[in-house]
Image (cartoon, rainbow, N blue to C red):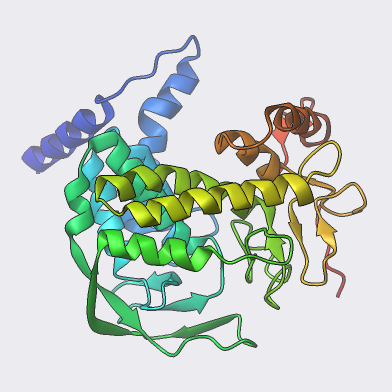
Length: 331
């Protein structure tokens, strides 16, 4: 028993000691150097029992995001997660929003626009940090099931493992290609939701557009173009450069509200995250990712972040809000 305890302590010490953050705040150091990493691995990756998500399911976007924190510490954790998630992509390029392992991978197929795109995002970050291009050659089977029709936003079921395989590179490309669909303003389609699951009826009729998703796609394309060129896929790299320009121009022409970027457009063309809205007048994601993507007009992006501080940062409450005012559904 003592031997096993010592082995566990040694494993955790080795993992936690890889990178150390030192600040004047001892509680912050403890949080960053031990507690958050421990919770991410034990709770999010192994147990999959996070706050208000205690069902034990893998989330396609969720666990891919989680392993980003381990790329600099133990990159094989991220590598295995990338490969696992490739196995939960349908032949058409979309993915399971979440699934339960050990139950024939029962899960839900949706029209969420961002889930599938976290695969190329995390893969590109993994390669950038590790230089491990060999991961792109690993072949993984796809899933097969009846695609969702126009009137169905989601379906719970048990898909089949396809006999068709694709390399990790091909899985990533399928995800990107499926994401490059635009509305009438040239902004990426929202689907039945993007990173904010609560916005599931903004674009579920197939016409709504997501400004945040535009910034996200620009960031992904910018990361993946060098990978395409590394693999001599030059035509695709050129095409992705053109898509980057198209998305950026469309956002700057159609999503600037005067003091910040709008969040989205509903299927009927009504803006969301605009000064004309009573609910969700401003959303932080569209502003912060104009800078994170390093794509937004700098003068506008900085002005947008001033609006974030004005409307979304409450110093008295030590709180940063996602959006303002809150969304309210009247039943």
